[in-house]
Image (tube, rainbow, N blue to C red; front, side, top):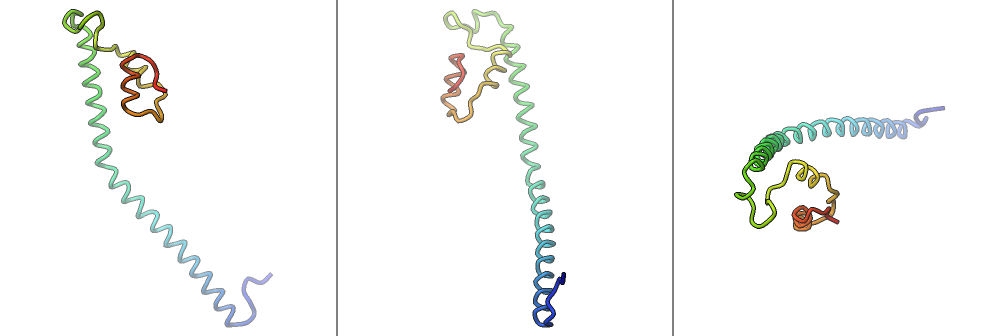
Length: 116
């Protein structure tokens, strides 16, 4: 089996097309690595925000746990406390809320039933 044609002009065109294809593959590989580096560089501020959000969430969780220790008559308006336990908050995070709007998820969390 021959890789290239016998006629010199056609063989030259075939070899040039093969070289162009190899050059295109090399360029695509280089471009992919450059894009990856840029994306990783742009990701750094987002990582900082995730870390800050995690710390803030921990702060609010500990504040809520401390608020649970306050006598009930201070926190209650009527018969029900407005704070939720850590288990209630964990259940609220684990509910299937994909596709539900923010207000639907909020109403579901406040009522104690999963969002639909």
